Length: 295
Image (cartoon, rainbow, N blue to C red; front, side):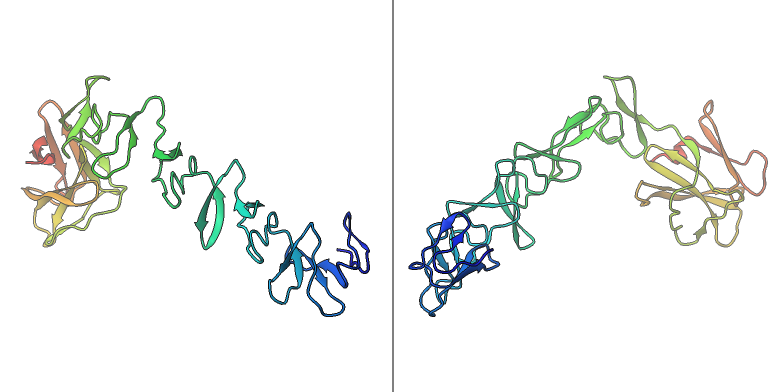
């Protein structure tokens, strides 16, 4: 800013020599500096009437509107804030002030998922903040399931084992959600053969994974996955072992004699049996479908 001395113009205002005896300039803190040439007290113009700091003043400021000296010398407003009537305020679109990382930020508590309703109240994924409340917005084909048991509200299609026909109606691990829309229910699972592509479980003591084909054949039924293990001593029998979706052991190993080293698995819906085919080949060892369900 241009310096002023003995009545020179500063901006649009004439600063009289009788008021400001020294040089005037930008002090870097948002105010205007005015140093008395005689070393006396600092006199400030009407547009910036406050001398800052109060002791040994070095600049002038308008503490009613200066974001670097809002309400007092050196009081700085946060990012996005303005100084109005000596107070730091946020703009109308983001009117709420919250502390974040040691600084003040402007936000909207009605819509901000990180500060929903109150500062630091973060919504859980995939919730959104609507009118200051964390909530979920579901697709047209989904149902909004209410919060329950400490769990937040969520969206569901109501045709899964977790929400079969109704929110929270979970099927047993060896059941599927089946039926027409409007009449879905949990029914005993029907086994199916699959290839092992997920993380391999750790076999129980005395058993090992030995497959003559890659990837290993497995059986899925409901939420269960069954592996056909072999004996670590290479004896001629299998160990049928079931796990849940988190690879927790839930059944077995159930010993099935007659073969070892699984090669393939076939299913017969007519007799509801499965053939475990190993090193001996042929039709393998026959077991009932109940082998792949819980007791």
